[in-house]
Image (cartoon, rainbow, N blue to C red; front, side, top):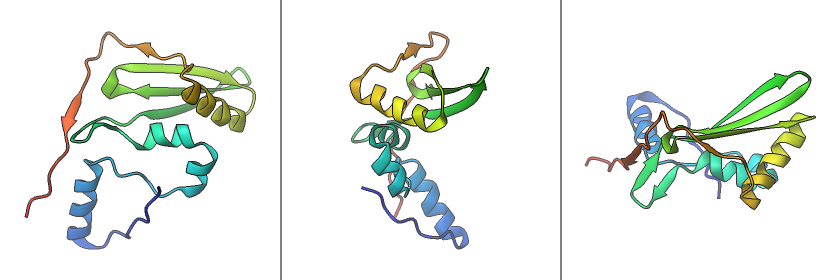
Length: 124
């Protein structure tokens, strides 16, 4: 469920935002979440377990000789993959379908190591 984000005002709000960033708080984008739920989940939830998280998954887009190449990179999990689509919206639909069906062509990156971190606990 998407949450409303408070505006950043002052150092205290910025500090709070930094603490929340380490906890994997999902962005407020209800339209994205409703239209591409599996892609939204993958891009916005970087928790590995209740108290651990990894670097967020990244979505990349570039023109590949007239097609759109949409790529996903999970640097904390040392995995990546990409697929070609005729249109950008077809790409977003295709990515979310492939993620849901577990058919996205993930490839391991042996040059990188898994990086899992502990969730930062707010200090009183």
